[in-house]
Length: 267
Length: 250
Picture 1 (spheres, rainbow over the protein chains, first blue to last red):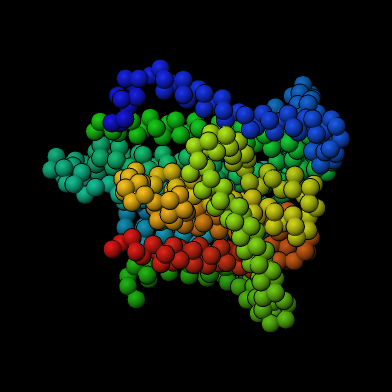
Picture 2 (cartoon, each protein chain N blue to C red):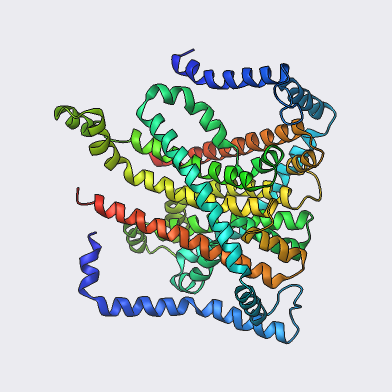
């Protein structure tokens, strides 16, 4: 916050410098791209190892025009939304219950921490036997992946609310509901939001894993399908889509997180 | 025992009792939920004659080999990004872009390039370990204190001295965080590699084989082993980190 006014005093050179460095950041990727294209067309790189960039671009255009790419993206996003929502809801409830009641924390926390130690990926084969390979499997895997960070951060966030704040509340004779709404919730909101962000990135990772292991649609399935058909270009397009959507999801929550931090700063 | 520990034990005991009760009364299909005794028997059988220790050793060696490779590449790359502005400008954006790929999405590509044998698994584990090590090393080196650098300038430190006396100790906490995260990622990747590239042995291979035979006891045992091994790695890394950073608290 202290550096900001200084930066505003000389916007010109700084912005020019930032633009120049962003352009410089493109040098290596662009040269690699050119080298890749040249290598592919002169036969240095066989298409079985790495298809040419224009071939990958053409594959992306094909997948887009046929609607396959959008359809698979839609399936993946729906799964993340459903599983993520279920996991977030359960994680918020569990984290809040453990954060607000020491008794509940005593009863549930050891079991919860033990469950948190089991990677969602490791559970997939076991859940496949219990749930089959349908949508229920995806829902449970993604919900579990989301639940753990959300519950942990909610729990920690509520626990970290300073005792002074609560004393002020007691002074005002706040009711339980008032204490929650006026003191606990605002103070714990930033860490809870951080938990949501971690939850979403875990959900995306779990989605890719579960779609690779057991799915007939979605971006992960597109990867598997591309591999089985020996279509490296499809695999590369799916990887790029996974990276882009993962980044977009994370950035949208990071934006929200920053808003929260700013709203909190003056107080 | 404290009241706290007693309370914590209630839920696991209830679950265990429900599990035992469900399999005794035949409420649960033993194919879907084998009795606790059946799982314990599978563990005993595996540990004594079924080659479970061998599978575990293979998984751990694979994990450490991939981790070592990834960390050995990530440390110098992180130092390069942290020390050199030019390197950061040229390589940073590319690294950031590649980092966005959810790690399991590498598997099909790696399988097409390297097959599904040992090489492919180790390469995949190395990729998973590389990113957190490189990222945290770069951040740690970059945040080396300006004051200390000025002190170094006063003492006319050479470049090598600057790296050894200022950058390395200053960045150590962050580097160790990266190594710790790399170790966690490497174990996840080991599980992933063994699940997706099913050739060869290892605990993950055992789980997949158990699933194919619908042997729930073997699957439960395998998942339990994967989780406890990960937990042990994490605990060892945390203890090592604490030990190596003891000097800071003085």
